[in-house]
Image (tube, rainbow, N blue to C red; front, side, top):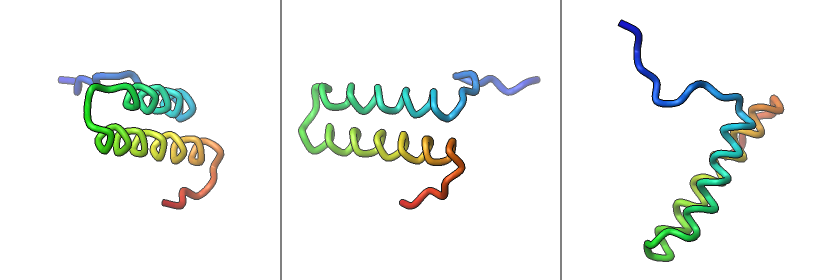
Length: 61
């Protein structure tokens, strides 16, 4: 039986845009400032990594 995927495969720039949207949403979540900042930074870092990989650049973390 085929493995079920939750989301269809998207190109890296679409995934980066989704992570940027999640980062913006994290800023307005009903949680502490520390948690909001941590989530925001996580999603922005992921978006930057995805965009760098889409351009064929090496990801420096």
